[in-house]
Length: 234
Image (cartoon, rainbow, N blue to C red):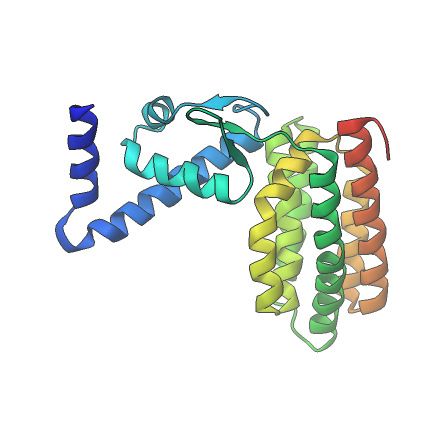
């Protein structure tokens, strides 16, 4: 126990005046690493995470890992165990429903605004958006599920970025990892990649209402697929 305290104290002291910033940076890296392991299912739903073991796996001290685990508990991706430690939270049907209730209007409005931006002459981000479509197709062809999920999430993030609305962007930041987790757990039918391509075509054409309508169809289809994949019902 004394050794652990000495290690934690040294970590917190850090490099003089920059110790606090370094700690934040390390905890952010730890959070990202744990999130990625949850998303790609190296840490399965319901799995217990031991702070010491996670720190060893990430080659980090326990302080930033502890902070990362606490943050993920607050975000709802981990849950505290009754006596000690945390575990990966299992997605319940209500979690999925709540996620789609927030994501649907956000995604639809983001597509509408992105198309309006293109119609107004702002095409600077179209190439990056198209790249995510190619990345998803490439990943699907190579049967690389984790990379395909990342590309799908990046597509939706890209649409939000194109919308030019910083509040939408901040909200999407809060949803992105939950969406990535959900996308990784469900099936990913080929027709959903085709829906992304259709959304892109309407956005690129500057057709705001067609972009919004195609996005609404896609998100509702995504919800149905997710519920069927995870719980056997629509």
